[in-house]
Length: 523
Image 1 (spheres, rainbow, N blue to C red):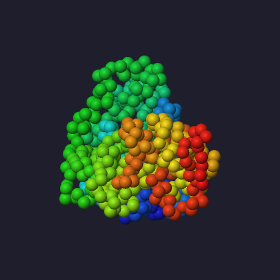
Image 2: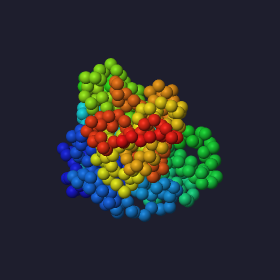
Image 3: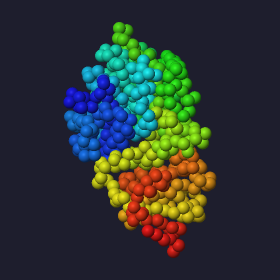
């Protein structure tokens, strides 16, 4: 670990990213390239195995990458939690929190803990080091307090309350992973019988720890004890069913400690002297946020610390939350797009103002490949990230393109399903011809295309600004199928940007409609 720290840390800072299979390798490498484009190189990657690091090194030899077989291969008792969920993923989540603690407490580093399914539109450090410099932990807000995937830890000293949060999280994960029977020792779980559920989830336990710190007394109620009854009921336990049918009992577990803890949060108002640092399109997004004054329960001598529940403009959820309303403000014609740079026009970020600093796509249930599609739609995908895991491609890796003419969309598309069918046939034709498809945008004047960009549907995203504004297709939920993940295409807005540099011999055009005898291909 010392060698990995030396290879990755800079000025006491390191970014920690965990990368698993082929999909995560691509989104992970894209995130590395995303940060490098901002001048941030201090990345340490924790991989599932040596082969993942080797694949990443093939694409980016200078990347610091480690794997931890002893931690990932440790045998786990047969609790419901350990057997119901992916064993590799559980071991991975456990390992990254142990590594986080060691980097912070032992190596005295400030750590930006990352998930691969994130888009960063701006460098977060100016905000973290000025606006929120007084908070030891800045974590993405989630129900009831925090999301365990995105957090920044700074200026932590061994023995203080922030160090206790990280250490206690690992103690609880270790306890319920390797001693599931210890759940019976908790105040409301003595009824449980083997196999126990024993929830070792990092996020559930982190939220219990935050409530414990705020209330000054340990609690396991919402994150562990409630789920003990919930999952044991699903496995036929009569004792669990009795508790889940008792509204008073369930409310006590879920809110009995959380509600008073939330009342102890303190409000942090914006310091508008730092407006230039918070460079948002929608500046009224910057309002008061909540912070948790951390103390170690039962240890009044431990130095206090502050945990900030980050505002949505800093760490945003996707597709719900403030992201899309802010993104539409970035698109406004009043920014005068004709005078701005091509990059500003493609990203719709005038003067590099942003809708949010980061958006977290954990809410998308279509895997890393589907998230890759969203990143490509936003124009933040780096083609170099596609160099890893080449064996998973279905589409040929070629510079030859297949372009559908605008007349192909003028008739016969009355719904999103019709466009999906059209896109599927176009992609199939591209596969048969050995060409990369240029996907046309959705029709501008169709009501169904307007509905497609709503977050509840999310079948399209509006990209481009001024005269280039268009709605581009998102191939969800089809990318849930593994083989679909390897079918590649190029958006028309990106094709137009590079078309002048492409030899005409590399481009084939399709005219009229694919169906029937009217279809034709012109090269």
